[in-house]
Image (tube, rainbow, N blue to C red; front, side, top):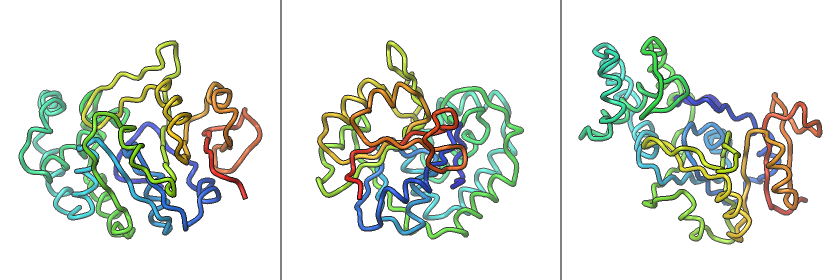
Length: 259
């Protein structure tokens, strides 16, 4: 599902996930950013609660649910006054603004300016923004039942710090997407909206946490090898299951019992 948040990772696994989950399961999702998978499940009446330890992401979605019109008006006004020097300053200072809706509007504008969907850093082009962007935000609100999108913030340094509080009856969902797999296994953690994704830690946490989980990765054969003891589904470019690695776009790894 397309959402107002721009990202360089477009998830296509929602259809397959709906065959893995059932609507009776209590799903707890982590790593909220674009909300593509989370919204698709929530708006189709799957029982999902979205958790994030990134306040910037929580606040934007919370304000979007409350009043997207205010965000859209503020975003259009900000864009009209913007110049490249201001963009660079705001990438560093936008979180210090006092009004949550102004912060959310800046989050939206900077996200749309960016080349790869970041907010607090990276290359940008103000030509990426137009009134169509703010209209798409309102259309998203008016076309979907956003009251179904349940979101909660938890104060923690790492996204996985809350895993221990997940009940045995719940299923964790992690839309990971692209992750750097190298000798260091480390992605650089930059920005208020970004998650500190260390593949080595994530792999260990999922193996040892003792919780039911479903994780979605962009294709990498190492993930298949590393999680060979778990259920693995390969997803092609149109969101269907495939057994052909050459046509695989995403990988779903989970430890749920198959019926």
